[in-house]
Length: 213
Image (cartoon, rainbow, N blue to C red; front, side, top):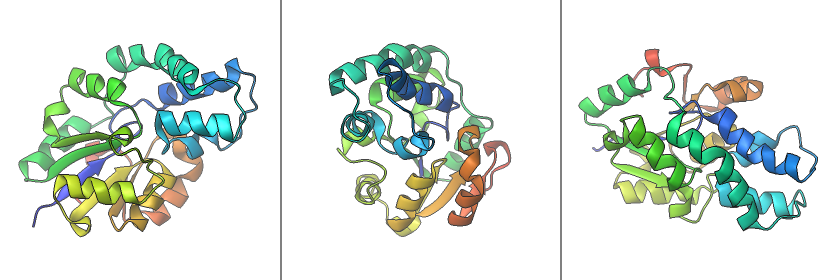
């Protein structure tokens, strides 16, 4: 039966979390909004739209969503277009899995305007069968339905799908949806690394020495 891998983007395939985090935290700093200690863990599965909504409705940020999107883009678009690198061993791992006939796909909270140019610049975009943003489903990665819909679009059963992500909340939700979950190390997630290891069906410290799952 067809086997599929679904990869998160930020912090999993590319070493972008410091940039991604900064584009969000910049909004809170500009508006002098207190920053919760666990803010990155909370907002990582939400995407730009979900984060803007969270900032406005939960944290009380006094900007409309379009103003927040403009601040995000001003900071982050040049980083994704020109600077952000693949994480160690990612290209080789993707090629190895592709050669074994595994369907490779992306599901990320990042919008296509940052996602697609980055993957194309890095020369791996064409290795994927589907490259999805949460915006394509109008759902966040904290909603199990997005994983079911992603599998449906790929044309693979949930039981034959492996989901790779560095975020604890996204991994919990993917597991709730019935996917096999592999946690991926990222420095920004060190505080919950042990919890992620316990939750996940597998764990990748670096793709340079990752196994097939």
